[in-house]
Image (tube, rainbow, N blue to C red; front, side, top):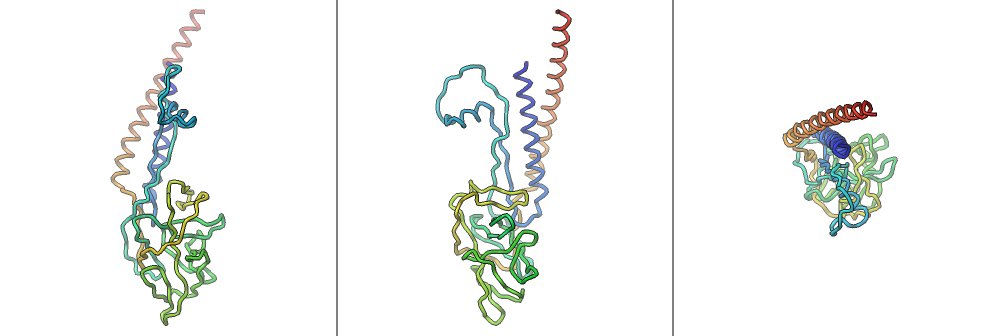
Amino acid sequence: MFSGFYNVVSGMITHGKNLDVISNNMANVATTGFKVDTFTGQTFDEVMYSLVGNKNKTYTDIGERSYATVPSELYTDYTQGSFDETGMPLDFAIDDDGRGFFAIQTEDGIRYTRAGDFSLDEEGYLSLPDHGRVLDVDGEEILLLTDKITTDDFGRIYTQNGGFLGQIGVYVFEDTAGLVKDPMGMFDANGAQPQADAVLLHHSMLERSNVGLVQQMVKMISTQRAYQSSASLTKMYDQDMGHAASDLGRLQ
């Protein structure tokens, strides 16, 4: 009975975590460059075998197996979103199938993002509002002083008279699996060393989020039902254990 109770409670916790992820995806459906997350759970046994390096190895059971689920991995889908033409002079969108990122110098260090809705800060530097300054291909901040600019297909920025102002850096990671998404939806390199690459940039355009709203709504409904079922079973197990304890007390 107790193992069943723990399994149901762990399932409810896992479904609750999944609901949080789905809700965050839906809340960011209109956020420029946002990348959708998917939550997965594992059984307790699977987690333990993974931790000791036996995830893909054979093993011998040493007792009754537990099917309690625990929060496991959060996967980010880096698939490129569609583009919107904005007409704004400091908007940029990366066109590379989701491989590259803009580099932003924040108060907490360099963070990476697909959001290209830039502006000029109070000192005239190209920046991502509320985050920090955009870095060029050499990791330096880009001083523009004006939004009266022209660009080429690779993010080189010029004055209207042809004077070179800088080139927006697009940084590519060999493996995005190690990136860590922060609460603001930006990515920490987590020790990885990305390389600046010559990537196609669309001027006066933005990349939409890759959140499929209908898909997320369907997942929300099914996960809510699973959560409610787990909650009902938890209540039933709690009542049964209470009755069992009461009956045991009367026998003594």
